[in-house]
Image 1 (cartoon, rainbow over the protein chains, first blue to last red):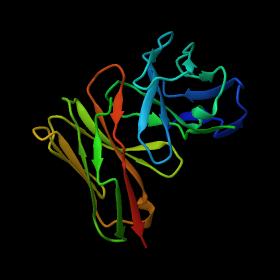
Image 2: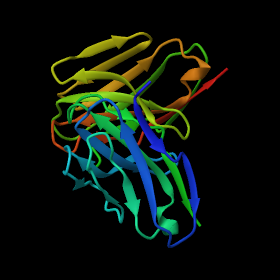
Image 3: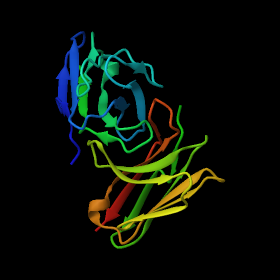
Amino acid sequence: EADIYQTPRYLVIGTGKKITLECSQTMGHDKMYWYQQDPGMELHLIHYSYGVNSTEKGDLSSESTVSRIRTEHFPLTLESARPSHTSQYLCASSGDSWSEAFFGQGTRLTVV
Amino acid sequence: SQQGEEDPQALSIQEGENATMNCSYKTSINNLQWYRQNSGRGLVHLILIRSNEREKHSGRLRVTLDTSKKSSSLLITASRAADTASYFCATGSGGADGLTFGKGTHLIIQP
């Protein structure tokens, strides 16, 4: 069982609300990632981090922002949620950029 | 940008049969990995094959890699109902942005 945790698992929220999706790992990994995945579809990288104080945007443009103040914590924030943000958000970490990635259980976000 | 492309998109077989999924990719890689995703959950790592390897086994899983054709296959032998899931290939080029995933193959094992 991977030591990476996401909360909440499910979130239904109204348009315009600010939300933060939490992701924590206890493996001491420097690399952390956020992917967005619509049901039955591929994963799209939206943010990644090399380590503390490092954040980069991924291939898929996203209105969300991330921070990496501590090694173990990589939260994702949406300042003003919209229905187009409805999706599943998956957090992952790895020891190296090319080694095995460990995934959290995901947060399924619905914006109404 | 998308790197891996799985084939077929969906596969339904009887329990006990073997399931084969294929993955093609476009650029040079450091390694190729296969992951499983149960419905609505996170991904679980299955197996990693390095670019200088041609075949790898893990339990009922067998992975092959042909770097000249930029393709890989995942074979699951003696399938079980619990193998029902989506299977993704992911390529690692060693770049800082980690792995790139394909669209996945949705596998259904009929009991």
